[in-house]
Image (tube, rainbow, N blue to C red):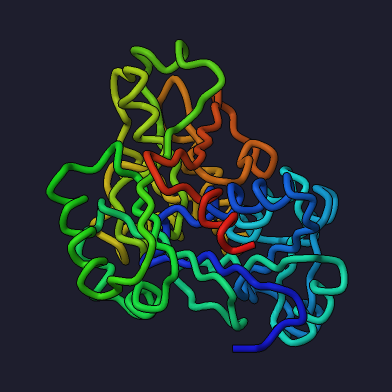
Amino acid sequence: MLPAKVPVISICAVRTGSGKSQTTREVARILQERGKRIAIIRHPMPYGDLATSRVQRYATLDDLDQAATIEEREEYEHHVQCGYVVYAGVDYADILEAAQKEADIVLWDGGNNDTSFYKSDLEIVIADPHRAGDEISYHPGETNLRRAHVIVINKVETADQEERALVLRNVRQYNPRATVIEAASPVHVDDPAKIRDARVLAVEDGPTVTHGEMPFGAAVVAATKHGAAEVVDPREYAVRTIAETYRIYPDIGPVLPAMGYTEQQMEDLEETINAVPCDLVLLGTPVDLGAVLHIKKPTMRVTYSLQEIGQPTLKDVLERFF
């Protein structure tokens, strides 16, 4: 792990899709309220030319035009919209050198369940009770669990009691010194009435429902919460690379993974969305797909935030940290 000249707080997870993004935003918000300058560094997403992506800096939505794939925009856009600078690339020594020049504190946002590349002064790790037991059976997620100073058990509002209890037992057994925070990830939509009794297509975060092995995501949660008549199964309408994704990951539920690692995948995703017979497309991805794809149907974004339950809170933890 590379040492930094400023404090480093890492936000990692036991599996992809556990809730790092909203946790990172909450930590950044608390730090910003204290007057701290924040730089968020993402783990590598080298989908283009590596020489030109040595050090990437995103501070405005216009900067995101450099991010060619949906997967990149998913990880950067929501932070930039909140006013935070995001660094990424492949040369993590030079990335750190650049980031710490403009920040009082560096936040490591460890994509998927990556371990921090930087020596962290505070390690926060997210666990997901919807995949209870995975926190001790996947690498490097288990490493993150064992190293953590703070473990956030997320999504407790949609998990059952046995799942929550199993995760908590594993946390207590494998990292008894960690501070434990329980949290929910409530979903938000602009117009819930449009979902009621509608036939909806649920477009979910690609990594979460593919190699993350979650059968559903925020779009399905919103559809259920607001009384959709049906979540339309898109699998029979999938074309080319999207159809191949379903073959590779047969356990995906009746949702559409927002695959966009290449221009071809993005074209196939757009064609698949437009082919599904539905009243409304629920976009449960962190990126605004409506701004990236030409979708010929009514759409609604589903966003989500972190809502801590009880004590302690992240603010309590950060106060002690300072």
